[in-house]
Image (cartoon, rainbow, N blue to C red; front, side, top):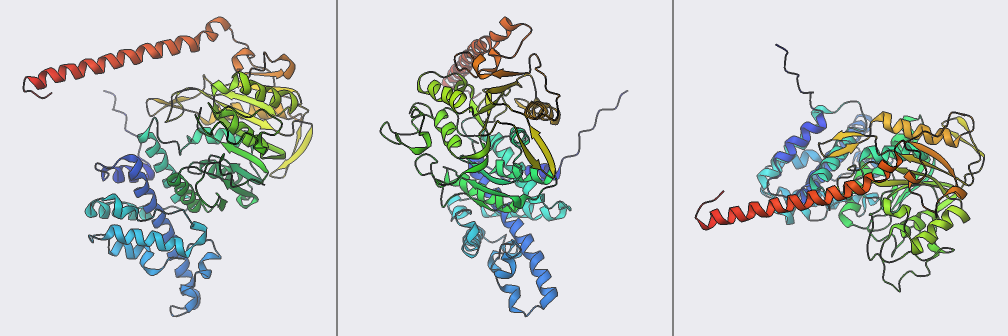
Amino acid sequence: MAKKSEKPEKTIESQLWDAANKLRGNIEASEYKHVVLSLIFLKYAGVRFERQHTQLVEQYGTENILCEMPVAYGKDNVFYLPEHCRWDYIMQHSKQPDIAQIIDKALTDIEKENKQLAGALPSNYYSNLGIDSSRLGSLLDVVNDMEKHMDDDNDFFGRVYEYCLSNFALQEGKGKGEYYTPKAIVNLIAEMIEPYEGKVYDPACGSGGMFVQSAKFIEAHGGNKRAISVYGQEYTLTTYKLAKMNLAIRGISANLGEKAASTFQNDQHKDEKFDYIMANPPFNQKAWREESELTDDPRWKGFRTPPTSNANYAWILNIFSKLSANGIAGFLLANGALSGDGDEKAIRKALIEEHDAVEAIVILPRNMFYTTDISVTLWILNKNKHARTATINGEMRQYRERSGEILFIDMRTCGVPYEKKYTTFTAEDIKRATECFHNWQRSDSGTYVDEPEFCKSVRVEELKDSSLVPSKYIEFVNRDDYEGYEETMKKLQGELRDLFKQEEESKKAVMEVFKELGYEL
């Protein structure tokens, strides 16, 4: 008899998540994430401080005033912690009824002592949440146990933080979790635009995942992550704080503006130009401005003003206006932006024909996001599609003349199931798409060829009515069947939704009947 296959051993991240999640009780995931992530930050800051403190004591002695001077920590990018903010102090008081107040004071005073954390940490959060002190004490024990599992990876806390971010986004699901872009998609963008050195910007930065992946890309290719300067902006205050904590744990310095604010109404990087832009702005954002507002904004100078009904083209023009002379951007939009009419079409036509800025369009599979099940598009804009050379990690790269051409890639058949109802890319999926793009860009490879059902290089003059829908250009074996696929699936989706709704209503009706008869189901 064949042995039952053993389940793979859980990672440390997943073990910690399971333990922490069991203590959640009736707290919503949207609230609980701030509890868990703030404690992970406190533990990270505590470990870094204790290590630095030990080194200073060994070097200067316990009585030396330098051991308690913030400058002795800040010089090595370690946060200075007053005694009541240190992890050992918090754990000594973890079973007290006022532990929530102790944590709140620690977070407040850490922010006061470390100006780079201004606006990053929750304020009076634990006291107002009303979490049971014994449950909070048990959660502190779980986070404290992290130290047992620490390895030589300097990014241990970063990995745990990202794992928890991802899982909270999964739990919050549709309509929430906008702060997190799935890692596989961020990897794809980074590998395509290669943010190796220079200024990197994200106008809707969420929890900072684009910046983290930029740093990882640099390290993976033997570079120095200090070679990039990070700029971002985030509208939601709680997400702004998540981003600041995320970047602090990764040791990434960033300018996220003085506060959480709208990129459109309060652009905090007005005079900056960027070498790389990575973004996943809100899809199909409605009423993003008043009719009389921002009509002559310099970001759309030379273009029509984006319509108030949908912010997609406002995001495109914000990004385009901030690219440096050789800048390149990779960002995500809903598929409708590929073929919209009216002002959107006029803007798209100008980007394509007058500015020759659209370099590639990559359509992604459905169900890649935790907040929506739609298929979306990765746009690549490039301010310099001419023949040129560039050096990345000491490698001289030759780029061919690609003026007046756009590469279309269709990745809708790529990906594997993830968490039952989602799709994620494999490393091979990402490699296939990025190699296709870079082979197309570079004259020294000579290996790019159009591939039916996957990719096609198209001259601008061959575009059909300025449409950027990949299926209009990529060759498909059964084109008629393919072009009807989306319409068929949408119809089927609608029918299934109606059936599920009817089923739910029937269940409620039956339950009401039993309830009237004095029985509970």
